[in-house]
Length: 161
Image 1 (cartoon, rainbow, N blue to C red):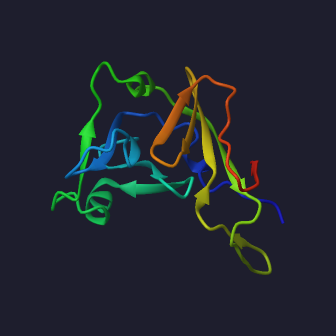
Image 2 (tube, helix red, strand yellow):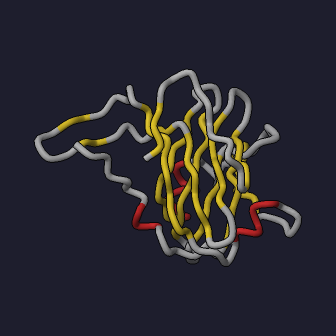
């Protein structure tokens, strides 16, 4: 059964705003996630899972993201990008493709006509109008690299789909 990239519905969407999800009580030097907003409320969250060497990609509405990560109570905060941040060069550009590093040994639920993926990935490569960005986690931080041939490396086997 062929893997279906459930994030293909984001192809063509223009990044209007970028927010970083960070710990509210202690800066870890790396965001917990990057929220690419396509309008005033909806967007794509890339969530870094430190120590697990995985990332999650999820579509969120801003109020739901704030609720799930307890932004109101200060457990996490959403930080606006400044002009000097590298990610700001993505604002105003559309997503051209999303490639996911799918684990070959992922725990998936199989049905007669479908496969539900676990939702965790080795990493992602997102092609924008102006650049490609590779996203992945390490033991102590989330990484994003612009225009690089470097892929995410992990002990587990994965394939780019």
